[in-house]
Length: 220
Length: 217
Image (cartoon, rainbow over all chains, first blue to last red; front, side, top):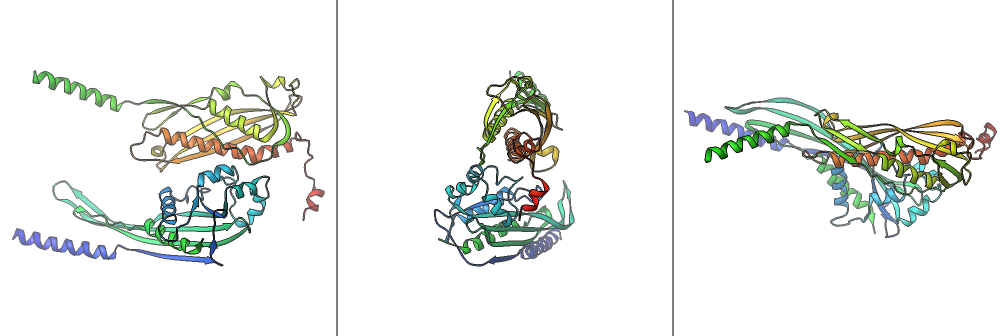
């Protein structure tokens, strides 16, 4: 009797886990706005800069590293200039306190003494601003644990990630294009004796899709 | 014999446990550097007084877990401010005090006396965030060529650095956050100090008038 109960219990548990695995997914939406493809060369390189003007929405360093890694590897890879070297060589004009927030501020910035010369000597023509972050939107459920029987229950939450990459042309003082990624993922933790975390890989999905779309816009 | 070793081990373990519960005090000297700013030097001769409040500044920061940090900022205060002033002005003359302004050689058009008023550090654990945060408040007293104070500039600077891992003690994060705060201080000085000197009539340029503004397209 006891073994039958245990067997049916595990069947039920397997079914719940299987259903949850199928349901635990990530949905994404990528929006792009580009006039034409971007041609790069060693003299007209690209630097990826992280928006750091707002603490709450600062893009997480691992996400930035993920995007950089994907952009600089695989097919159609892009050569990126080193962010810190660029920031130091143009100090203080791209620091969070004074960095241009819109493309309209570029003429004023590049008109400052020595700035356009430094940009040229850095071999940078395109600045790619990366911003956005992940936030937990909703969640529910609960899990109860007991030392003798283990954990039972179910909890879930939904993460939303919104990232945006704006590419500015420092030579023509214009915006070349914008790519935004809205990714939503629902994570579950069913607990049947032990908790089984089924985490939606929201950031990984956003990083991967965004990087591939950006790479598609560059030729050279 | 075995009993003796067990006793020794128990005493050793107890000692380690007691020591582990104790609070630690860590001393660190910050040595921040800033890049050379991309600016044109102003054709001005500035006097600068680095007093002891600034060059010997040290602060003690207490975390909620009882750990103490003794943070020395004197060297960096002096180095960063000197680097910025020499980047901003054609000539910088270090003076022993403000009284030496009128007799400075070469003569100076104004004297700047920087001082630090506050340094605060918040660990990631205390803030309940992923970041170590640092804030600083500096004042720069501005004196004219006769040694009369014409104004004071207040500068609030901020820096932060992401916690590197669960086992971190925080030294490298505090150091990096303080570097960022000094970088922020430098940005404010480069951007705003020339305007403040202009407003105080110490740059030899007249302030823009309404009629000048009207001419601008």
